[in-house]
Structure formats: structure tokens, C-alpha cells
Image (cartoon, rainbow, N blue to C red; front, side, top):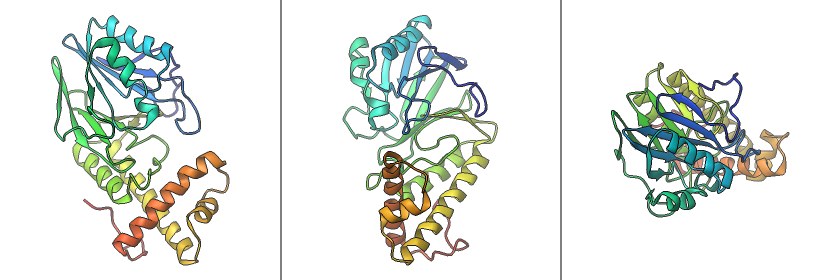
Length: 273
């Protein structure tokens, strides 16, 4: 399985990370997607589900098809963890190739909490994990002790908050929700980057990081700085493209502070449960 310090997979070369769980790395590496979008192909019982098919790239679609064919399966559904294009652009062409439905069925729709996906001897089920976006979901594979987290949890860093669609309250609640689902012998399979081991400890660390960032933004705001100025002060080395994402997260934090009228002291503010 791909670890933080391990060798990254390459586009067009699928990797089986667990029995019936295949990673197909999309060829869209950039400053937003890191190594590229992780497309997950789940197979079992003659059926396959593709989670986050990624960009509409012919070679990437062929690589997904090859995994489905090699497993002796037929693609039953295309599932999106959220609506962002780096995860969803290939959904329609892939679904058309296999005459398969897309979940959710409408753009920016939401997969219902508890939706089950049968994979023969095992299953996956959906839990709502908004925050990065309002429509975020994760897929829990209890038999494998795995969770596909989309962009709710990433290795190395916290995801940016796509404000006003995403919110700090939602992302903190989603991280607490995931912590209640897993133990530290589980593994997160994120939408970008390597796997996350010891997920409960990792979530605790990421929540602490997020709250420290809230404190930083609150201090800058108290000094009269606006979102763009705060983003530049906190992230002085980011280029203009990534700075826009940082500014969106700053705006989400300012909204969180305004809505909650929170005491900015770190000892009094906790992630909601």
C-alpha cells in the first residue's frame, strides 16, 4: 500500500492496495491535486464501483476499464465523493461507456447517509462528510477497515475549505465523525496523495492544526487585516494560484469566527461533535 514515504504510483499503472481495492492515479498532477487525483476501483462479486473517476482523459479512462475487465467485473455505478472537476469530469463519459448510473444523480447532489454498495462478500457504505465542500461524502469499507475520504482528509496537509460552499464547522464535525467510525488499525484512502495510517491520531493532529490556524486568522483580523492580506501573511511562499485557495480557507475561518462569536483563546474553542 502506498505510504507517505513510499514510491508514488504512476498514471496508467493501476495498483491493488487491498483485495479488490484498486488505485488508478489520474494524470492531472498540479499544485491543486498534488500527485494527481486518486481514482478508486472497488470490485467484488462480479460488480465494480468507480469512486472519483477524475479528469476526462482517454488514457485514464482506458486504465479504469482495464481494471474492471481484468477483475471479471462489470461497472455498476460511478460514485463521486464531491463535485469538484478533478474528481468528477470523467463521470459522464465513463458512465456512458458502461451504461452505468452516477451517484449522486445530479450535480452538487448528495448521496444519502447510509447508502450501501454491495461488493459481493463485502460492502461499502456512505457517510456524509461535508466541509471541503457541502456535498462531501466518504465511503466506509468495514471488512477491509478502510475509508475512502475524498478531499475531507488528505495526507500531509489539511484540505482547503471551498468557502462559501464549505465551512469550518462542517469540516471539524466531519473529522470528528470519521474519528468515531475508525480505530487506529484502519487506513484512510484519500482523494489525493498517499494513504493515512493511524487515522484517529492523524485526525486529532489535523484538528489541532486547523484550530491553530483559526487562532492565527483571528489575531490578524483583530489587527484590521482583510482575507487577502491575511492569506499572504500566513502563506508568504505560495504562488498566486495556491494563494487563492488559502484565501478561501481564510474567508471560511472569518465566517466561522463571526458566526460563533467564539472566544479566540485556544483553550475555550473545541471542534464540534
